[in-house]
Image 1 (cartoon, helix red, strand yellow):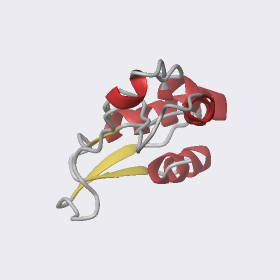
Image 2 (cartoon, helix red, strand yellow):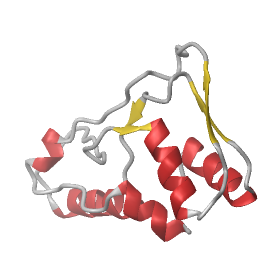
Image 3 (cartoon, rainbow, N blue to C red):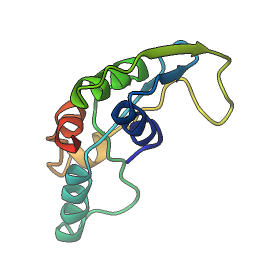
Length: 121
C-alpha cells in the first residue's frame, strides 16, 4: 500500500482527519498489485522483451480525490483538510508512468484504483 493510501486508510478507520498537503491537486499514477503481477508474468513469457518497462495505472489521480475515495470506502466521518505548504524537492507535483513500451506487448492496467480501494475495506 502506498504512503497516502496506508496513512489515510488508518486515519479514516479511526475517524481522524485526513490531511492533504499543498493544494491537494497534485496527481499520482496508482496501480493495483494484480496489474503489476500481470506485467511481470508477461515479461516472463515474452522472451523478446528487453530493457526497462514502466507499469502504471494510466490515470492521473489527484490526492484530494484519493482521500475522498478512501473516506467513502471506509464509511468514515473523517474530515479532509487541505493543509497547504510548499512542494518538496523529493515529492513532485505530478508523478505519472508512461506505459507505451509495455503496451506494445499487449499489457494494460485493468483494475481501477477506486475499485481496489473499495476491496480494501
